[in-house]
Image (cartoon, rainbow, N blue to C red; front, side, top):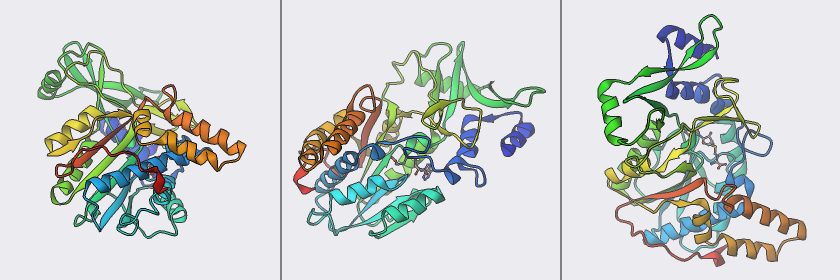
Length: 367
Ligand code: SAH
């Protein structure tokens, strides 16, 4: 990418966040601006594309959240990074018979990719939907039920490496003569290095930590909205929940994926999906520091099973052909099996402090 080269030639290097921002969001060549990342024929497949069961269970959870909020007569149903709109379509179908809920909301989608927005318009054409470039323009006068599946993993991260007793930032530079992109490190500012040592006192030499500043900003913005109205944000993503005080070894999680396969991070820039695992523990700390409540961090399997996915699969199977039964079972397995998406993906809810964190039983009869 020309722009990356120019920036590195001018500044000597760029950090990982700048690299991801340009590779993913550059207005001309950015992956998330132009490409169609999600789906069987694209670079990666997500839970809503695996099975309708996923979106339906998220829909049931939205109804539970709404009940906890005291069944407000007006509210917003929001999705961050809705991909092809599949999950929202499944949510809306799942809740269509819930009295009080079904007529009470407007749908708001936060999306930066123009092509995906067009697909979302088509998928959701029978509903009234409003699009937003970011969460700042979301309505703040009614309660918000926000869902985000595989959204936070796209946001740019900074990566730091511990060398000896001090921390260095991972950057990207150009190899002399060859002009190819390569990884390099630069020492972090000394006071920042000291604060990383305080936050991560047991980390060993060679470990890498990742900080996703835009994710923390979004949590802070959401928390600000939740001060004036009730709200809930459900985050589903692949990630980890580790207390930084206890962490000893840690590898970076920045990865590139193309055509469902891992790919070198520094090649084919702009044509491959770049992601990093979500640090759930860190997001939880930011939410708590901004006066929100936070649920227990569950694995995707725990969350889906608790919300009735097995029952829902049984119900679907009763009306299904033998071929469809195989498909339903395969989808359920992919979503919940620990070797597949069941364990690596985590689920956490951040909610305004005036909501009670009671878990209600699944209400499958609504679908
Ligand atoms: N949630 C969908 C899609 C996941 S891919 C699913 O599960 O299938 C990530 C989605 O987030 C895409 O729709 C992408 O265009 C969108 N996205 C990525 N970064 C974004 C940003 N900074 N602002 C808004 N949308 C973003």
